[in-house]
Length: 243
Ligand code: UDP
Image 1 (cartoon, rainbow, N blue to C red):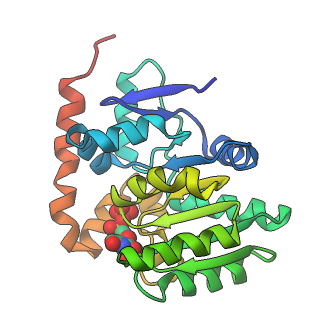
Image 2: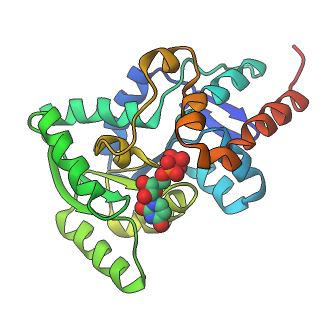
């Protein structure tokens, strides 16, 4: 039985990083194709008006809190989120596990060449990691057909989809059954970080829950999206239950 806490109606799994990785491996090895989403407060806000996105998040097999804001918001719920389970760290921990057990991975998303560089770097970092295919995330209908065929022919155990939210969630949801993937994960801009194109915040910022601030300063073009953070905080505060 899943232990879920709802943040503005989005159901998050209350798991530690270790538990989430374990559950990710179980989902990957189960019969049914499964998908994992990693929403941050911006995506929770987007789901308030995008009903298709909300429905996909509700139907996902695991939903992990990518942002510290989501973890803080859970303190108004009966079940609290244990810690931030950042999508990037989650995939790194999965890599470390499947590098030992031999399951295969496919990288789909990012600008041309980014997923390729990311795959090369990850295979250097995790000895034994088997990345069996890469495709960039810019496609028309014709190229999409080719991408789908390529993924089917490689039949990976894990498909990472980095098209940005909510495009990646919708893409995974629509193609999951057809592809029959063990586990599909929406990873946002993670390929950019794996390829060394974008830097994660220093560990201290991450520890203090200030990664969002580091991103705002280093990628100021995100300010419009980040305006959703105070809106999220205010919406959570307004809808809180007194206990
Ligand atoms: N992207 C893509 N195809 C698109 C739009 C975006 O592959 O049509 C990629 C883009 O290159 C970037 C990622 O999606 O690597 C989005 O990154 P961002 O940091 O905005 O994602 P977030 O994690 O914030 O959702």
